[in-house]
Image 1 (cartoon, protein in one colour):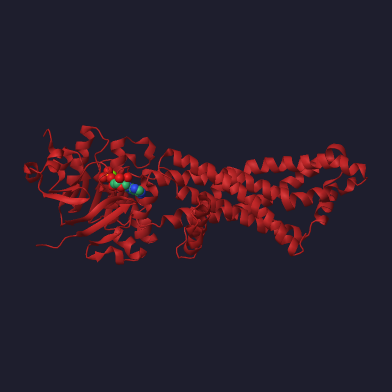
Image 2: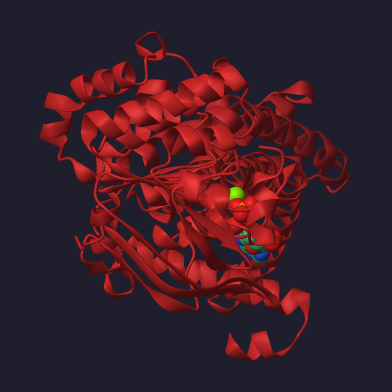
Length: 246
Length: 257
Ligand SMILES: Nc1ncnc2c1ncn2[C@@H]1O[C@H](COP(=O)(O)OP(=O)(O)O)[C@@H](O)[C@H]1O
Ligand SMILES: [Mg+2]
């Protein structure tokens, strides 16, 4: 079997007495969209924040692009983060900066001053074009609609050409039409840049459209795993709960 | 600090956390790659936000102080002491403390609210994820800017308030500017300016540290942001008074008073 880009093994994380992740494991392979399905509060965000090292787990191993992230120092981790895009559920756009400044921000750490002077403009335009929002370049985040903000946040993630993108509930809170557009956008990015992705979601349309493989996060564990259709046939009551009414 | 953690008291825990935060500031400030552009932005922002308020207050302080000292000194026939007395009070105490309190209100709450809302909306996490060290970019620049700007603003406040005092003298008497200035300046020695300057550096540092600490560690929710801003002002103002008290004692021991 081919080697995974991200491998998470036996991850444990608790907050006080709240044991959120219990021996959770997953593998993400090249070019695939892996969906993590789980109900609200089950620890999905905690999981991907552990992967990008915003949260430190108590135990377990996370290997990204052959590097065990617990062994990296801050500089090495920052370099690795250029390869791993992260799309926040709240978008987390810098609200005191224009769209252009938002997109340029990640470059300041990863490109030299000369590189930025030479190529930043083109990179920003390219990323905005990828998400179809070239005309917003000089706008402030507050002037954008929810769907547009999601796209700008995605453009900010794309600017460093990551090999993997972690999406935290990309369609939650958006209307069905906008959600569909975001789903299509995620697919087109996967196709164009050959990125792999972990997509957190409980939106069945999103999962069906974008997911190549699904993991169900239940009780802090990797409870069930397979293609959407396989899971649809699963008879375990906890799995069935998610597919009621489909 | 480990001792402070053992005492299970929220106040001491807060003091411990603030001390750790300050420790982190000193570790990060010496790391390479300074964020000069953001530092300059912050200096500009602080000056822009507070200059008019500091200026007006200082002017009024100088004016009022002169008008109020006048009757007392007149009684003793010591009217000519007004310039030296007033300028001494302004330089040593009034201008630095008033400036620091205004800055605690404006800068402390501004930084607390700004970083608080960035924390709550995950913008600080987003910086971290993009490989930019948010502590260096947001905290170090703001603390340094406030440490540099409060002494500058205080010096301006001293100049403006002394001018206010000059106008105050001339409301009733008639002293020309060069005589006033001569008398005011004559009373002042470096022993007055230097402690005053040094203590405003500490005031500025305290205001920056408290504002960034409160904002950076803001609790989730809009309520948390508001709380960060208000407690930043309260704690910073209190620290200004405490530091002032300490400064007086130190100056006394060093024989500067
Ligand atoms: N920083 C934190 N401190 C304490 N508890 C947290 C923190 N972050 C998340 N949790 C808890 O962990 C659980 C999982 O949260 P989360 O991963 O955000 O859920 P979701 O699956 O909806 O994304 C929740 O019960 C939440 O209360
Ligand atoms: Mg979540």
